Structures are given as C-alpha cells and as structure tokens.
Length: 371
Ligand code: XIL
Image 1 (spheres, rainbow, N blue to C red):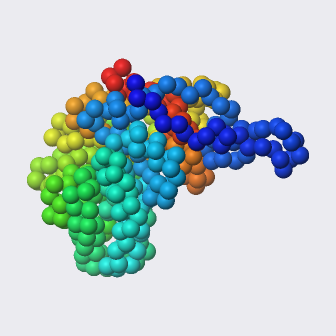
Image 2 (cartoon, rainbow, N blue to C red):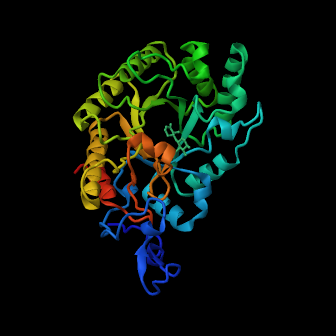
C-alpha cells in the first residue's frame, strides 16, 4: 500500500501554554483555537492514497489557490486526489469583477497545479446567482443575457482543453414545494431558456468540455427540487442541448438525509437519461451527530462510505468531489455557513486539521475499492 504523506509535523499539534503561566504543559491545538482541530489526538488509520484506489473515477477536492502555498497541504492534496475544483476562484465575482474585465490569475494557478500533478479539473461555476459581480444583477434583460453569454464564452475559452468539466449552471431552482426557478436569481428573469443558452455558449467555446447542471438537496427522490431538476435534464436531453451530466452537491445534513439506497436509485434514473452523474461538493458535518468524538467520526465514516459506495454502484457515476479535504479549511468553519448544519464544530472532511486521514478517509477508500 502506498503510504500517506505525513501531515503537519507533530509539533504543530500541540501549543505550549506559555501565556497561561502553566509552563511545561501542553494543550491540543483545538483548545488553542486551530480551526477544525479535533479534541485529542485520534489514532491515524492506515489509509491508502485515495487516488490509488479510485480507478478511472474522479476523486476530487475543492480548494482555494492561496492554499497551494502551503507545502504540507499541497502534498497531501496531490497525493490523494486526481481532480481539483476551485472553491471560489472561478466564480463570476472573482473572474469578471467588472464588465468585460477578466481576471484569470488565481484560476490559472489552480489549473497549473492540477496539470503538474496529473489531476483533472472540474470548473465551478459559470452561471450562479451567488458570488455574482454586483454590476450584473442590475442589468436590464437583454444586457443581462448578453453579459451571461459573454461571460460563459470568455471563461470557457480561456481554459479550453484544460478544464475538462464545467458546472455551467449552478442552483437555478428554488427550495420548497413549487419546483420553480429561484426568485432570488437575476437569471430567472430571462426565462427557463437561459439554462440551455448557457450550455450552448459553453459548448461552442469548448466542444470537448463536459457540461454539468449542479444543485443541492436533489440527492434524494421525491422532493420538488429533485423532480424539477430531473425534468430539466429530460427536457435538455430531448432538445439536444449539450448537457453531459448532473452534479449532486451532497452537503450532507445528518439530521435529515436520504438513505444511501434512495440516493443510488436517484443517481440511476439520471444516468438512465444518458447523462454522467457526479457527487460534486460532498461534506459530512458531525456537529449534530450524537455521541462523543469517536462516535461522531464512526458515523461520519459510515455516511461517507455509503454515499461513495452508491456512486460506485452506478456505472454512470463518474466521480466524487469533496468540498475541501481538510477540516482546517471548510466553509462550515465559518459560522455563517456552519449554522446551516446546526451546532458545530462540524469537521466535515476526510482529513483532519493537520492533514492526517480520518476514519472518514478510510471509509471512502474502502467504498472506492468496492468494499
Ligand atoms: C462556498 C464556499 O465554500 C465559501 O468559501 C463561500 O464563502 C461561499 O460558497 N454550493 C456551492 C459552492 O455551489 O460554490 C459553495 O461554496 C457552497 C455551496
């Protein structure tokens, strides 16, 4: 078995309590406030490098370009993942902050890192109501449509041949019972055809890129949003729109979450439309899982295992991407987002805050290996 690279040096796990006057004592990093750090040092499980057991499947992580400057993080990332996704650096506000003013540097750094390390690249995201540049939202209809097409075209062309998969449209549908396009997106004013227009523009800019519709809380069967996205996928396929896949974000909420068998059934029906399906933003927060730290980690492992196994069981499921990979940097460490999943700390990712594999990583590796 290929061994995991070492995470942060063990010195990093402990912080001398110099300031408190208890000279000579040490406290775990979490008590000193390291983000995502776990209580005490859990034994590190022997886990194969995830990409060594992923086969042809994508096993990916979302990161920010600035993190690549940390050698220990970069090493564990490249050793375990065969795919990279920009957590924020390719979103509209960052890539086109002013009309026609494109800024590709941070995205370029991520793409270069992926290429240097033999990783594929999942672009995220072209058309989304959030992290949109402020100038976009106020545009009148025709100008908004033109701005959308120009954005999609320029961004996809810039990374043509290097970004193999794009989330073209993200989160177009509202939560709740109606299955409507969301009222809080400026793109909704363009009518439902904005979705196919965005896909066609992306395809014209890079015909080889695989184009995805991506959303959250569509993982199970029977919710209005899952049904609306299924109908959209059916309609786009029937109309010959160049959609290649549907991304299921899979931000797990352990308080209410579909069973793995239901997730599998749902992935299967989308795949039966002739689409790839992928898990695109998985994390498994433990804050609301009952029990002590060890129990939480075991339940997190089980949930992650069963979801990855559901993907492995569906031949059209081409990959799994995690939303981050180390508990040190998760969007759920930010109280604004963490509150969506109840009380923290959430520690939602397969590697701990010192980049050592957690039981969750072992569960993922086992599922990838078909166990
Ligand atoms: C999140 C990022 O992780 C945060 O850093 C940022 O502040 C907000 O967006 N669905 C998505 C992702 O498609 O782009 C979001 O990423 C998480 C939810």
